Amino acid sequence: MKGTNLILMGPPGGGKGTQAQSLQDKYGLIQLSTGDMLRSAVAAGTEIGKQAKAVMEAGKLVSDDILIGMIDERIDLPDCAHGFILDGFPRTLPQAEALKGLLARKGKALAAVVELQVPDELIVERITGRYHCTACGAGYHDKFKKPEVPGVCDVCGARAFARRKDDNEETVKARLSAYHDQTAPLLPYYQNEGLLKVIDGTADIAVVTRQLEQAIGAA
Ligand code: AMP
Image (cartoon, rainbow, N blue to C red; front, side):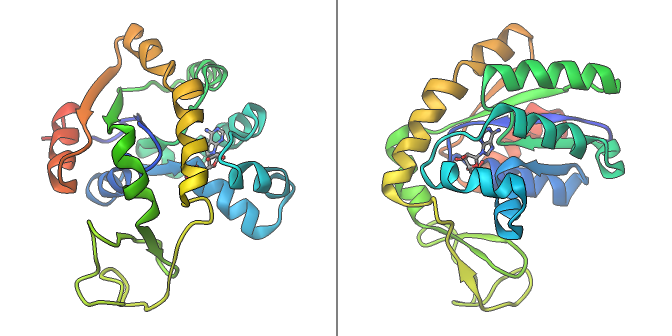
């Protein structure tokens, strides 16, 4: 697994973050979530955060230039030398082309692009039910993944949870449209490159993890 670089693709709420987290914990691959990076920028009030805030709240895509610059810099940090998982990037063809160029320039390659397939009709329930621990970021769901002790984070024991501002029904619809219009064309693109692997993302979290491990040759 060392040095393996992956892309996780799939609709919002398709399980990319959950699965990337699990690969990070098990194999030390670094989860690079562009959504998390942008949320940190918004919280910190940086120039990028100011530009991204309203776009994210509307469920639209932030500009390619911002995202490409962020990933270009992030991949150069030493922790990425052990392998990374792109979660939420690339989301457009220009981002995919830029990624190809910047990886070649850095002497890095992709091992696989994995699509977690989840139909639209399951997405709204998945997204509107999710929340996270504000201390450690561990993800939970009202129905599918409750903490073992109600109100207490399984991972760090904290008792404060929050929901993402864009995890509401109206914004989810805009995010799904963005996915189908701008991101889904990347699937044939990576199929052409011989990198695409498809997994049924509707199964239980642990089952999806096992299938993902098989797809990337870890199991
Ligand atoms: P996510 O956490 O991946 O669901 O991303 C949350 C929001 O951040 C998206 O709805 C977009 O507004 C923005 N975002 C994240 N990644 C990208 C990207 N690669 N390109 C454009 N916008 C992005």
